[in-house]
Image: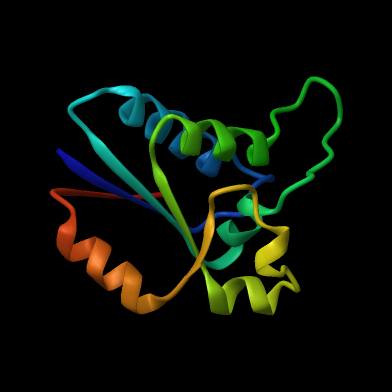
Length: 116
């Protein structure tokens, strides 16, 4: 099954992005599933490398890295990272600057679409 996750929420302040990435990683590890994750709006900050969080709290950048290593593909809205002052070189390894055109293609590709 081909599954697309669209994340809208900031990396911290709610657990929406955290829980979306937990599910995306679990599905990406399942051999039968192909997973893509698109970060848009405040969720673009989830892809910022080098996040420092207090001990005992989850690190959403690390979660995203684990999701990528499990086989998911991650695109980050270019307009959204520009608006937040995040350069493409600031993104976690293997996440890429993306576009609305790519999100359109991914949406057409997907069997399931999950929005968080």
